[in-house]
Image (cartoon, rainbow, N blue to C red; front, side, top):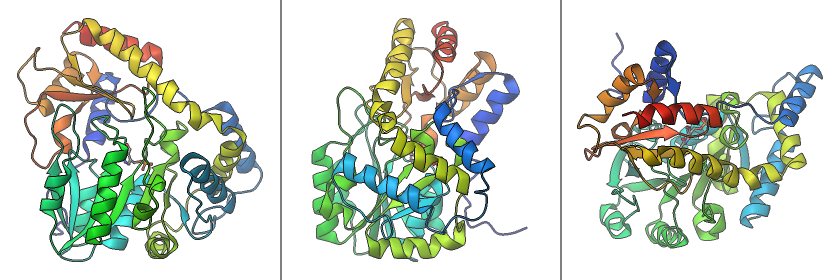
Length: 380
Ligand SMILES: Cc1ncc(COP(=O)(O)O)c(C=O)c1O
């Protein structure tokens, strides 16, 4: 037997709950992926390249056409001019980008600040580099960062902060004040930032996504990570990217080339075409998911759950404390079997779960799926 480098890590909850949903035939609102297909025009473009002989290695940093389309999108959406050659790298999903960015920065003994609750891939990546994650709690009900407490947590060993806005699992969207506070602290203390912005285009109620790319002094010390899987309804393609200043990108690519080297060529080419052909896709994504959020919220209106605000992402947290007093990890499994709806227990995102009675439901589903799930949940 090998001695594990990740003693606190089991199989991710997303795999566990999706497996259970499959076994039991439950409606799967657990893992974050759509149950509807990608745009037909995008599938056509990928098929065009797949059939057209574009099936060998792409360049290590990604197909030039896709990197250029992404650089153009960053300029158009956030007003930041980045070089497709020296600042944009295509990766095998955001997960790989997060891993490489963390590996590029964290050295043995470094401290990294995470916000609690946090997406589950950050901490293992930090641990594998010999770093130590410190968690700063985001407190219910609004899950906002407390910048004074953040500063109090800093030490000479603090090297990196990992942020995530719009935030999985809480659906919180950071404000310009949050980004300005972060920028001031990062510059004052010489920190680096990994910004997980995979839900960058899924924000609601007229809010604006505050990308790190909008704050030049912050961008100068940041790796900005996103996922084409989330934006184009193709999570199974595992295509993400990292935008970072040239000096940081150089180190990022040094690692990326030995983690995955490159990602699937015809898919990169198809996505590059689609980004140029259909800029409205990402511009309309917020409205598309806001309608789903509102549909699900409306259907759940008569239930005994209480809905937490969801300002972005495709997740809705539901508080079940009025229904039952049971640990969320056990309840999520029991309700998958007995009610036929799979969800994600919130406590798994925490180092120190506060004991809230919250489950996370994914509403990136067809209207029919949402109706059926809500009908079952309303019976509780
Ligand atoms: C916050 C967050 N970051 C990263 C990822 C991973 O994205 P990808 O599938 O592109 O690796 C996800 C996927 O659920 C996520 O929710």
